[in-house]
Image (cartoon, rainbow, N blue to C red):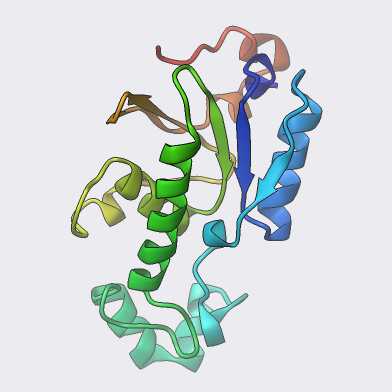
Length: 178
C-alpha cells in the first residue's frame, strides 16, 4: 500500500522467489504498468554449503568456517559459497547500470536481499572499503530511499518498517522524505 502512490520508471528485482514475489505484490498495488526487470546481479549471496541452514545448524556442521566468516567476513568464504568481494563486484555492475538508466525525477524500485542491499547502497553512494557494510541493517520488507541529485547520492531513509506495524488507514499518512 505504501508504495502504491509512487509510480516507478523502473523496477529491478532479484530473481529469487521471495524477492520477485514481493516485487509482484508491490506492482499489483501500484497504478503504474512498469515491468519488473529480474536481475541476477541482485541475487542474495550464495552461502554454499550453509544455504538454507540456521545459524545453530551452520555452527554444528561447520563451526570453524562460521567462526572465521563471522570474524572476518571479507576474507572468509562459506564452503562452496560466494565471497563478499564477488557480491560487491556484481552489485557494482548493477549500480552502474542503474545510474546510467536513471533520468531526472525518475523513481526506481529495487527489491533485493540484505547483503546485496548493503553492497548496492555502498556502490551507489561511491563508498569504498568495508567500514559501512555491517553498519547498515535491512529487515524484511523494509523501505530505504536513496536520492540521486545529479551524480551526488544522498541516503534519505534506511530500513523503514512503519508500514508493517500500522493499520491501512495509518499507512496512507506516511510520506517519504523529499
